Length: 439
Image (cartoon, rainbow, N blue to C red):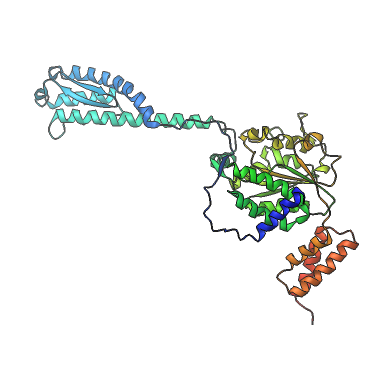
């Protein structure tokens, strides 16, 4: 038995292995996708520790001039200690002997010198206590004033950051996804085996692609990098279920699925986004999926890449075609820091799984071919078709499902059917048995 058959036998064994889905899972794997520049978090208290001694010293110096002028006999002054200030007097008893007019005069001077603080004169009949209370008021008032300045500078710094040119909705989406995002799917090799055995059961004729992706994902998960497999290009005749692999994989992983028709003239924009200069910048479906779902490893299917055209040109003369848009995203090095042309923000797209399909490869860009693993997809056999029909009609009577499977499999062998037609025939069988009957 060759290596591929050994792999398939192992996958088949997994189906009946009784793998314990209730076993404890390893910690969730996470990945940073939005690569915003690292900006130090604001430490407002540390900034106040830095600026407040100077601010208090400046204001206290002016306050002490007013105190010396108003009551020189008291030999009194305010002293700054870091972010605090206190009132000292060499002759404190003199303070309480001063007439009320002295306190009124001092009040007027302090209001002009330090308007942020409020001197209310004697406290409980004591001018000394009132000045001590004023020292605390001085610290509180100027600390609050400087705190507002610090926060205002931080707001302005953020406003001038890398996201300040974005529309409000786009900015909020980017900021919400700026942390580490989860990588959904298996976290150990046993779960990888379980996943791919199910995908293989859905489309056994895709065994070459299944084994290729299974081996790659096993390696990635074993290394602790989470579920991922390399870009695949499935080449085969129309209607052979090439898209089935991507859809089954996305469903098994529980990740977002994006399907793009390469024959569409806007396919490049759907993937990369609409850059500034085209009348309205919009991110592509890939970035939009990551930002909205906050999942780091979506599955992207690009159907019929062989139909990709020459692209479109902007009024400025720049050309945008699907192959150009895909090249950087499929390259393992450049996709780690890929700049969205619409948002002008860098993204790490290295955990995205790409499934490309084609009916022929002679029209596919050679540079694109060098970045994917080409897999030839054969026609499903009649046995495969019979199994598909039985699975789709499994909830019906077993004898009826077997009869339908035989008829549709025979039609598959004698006529040029596609899997879409097989699905339609199954739907007709179901409707004929479960739909309302005429009397």
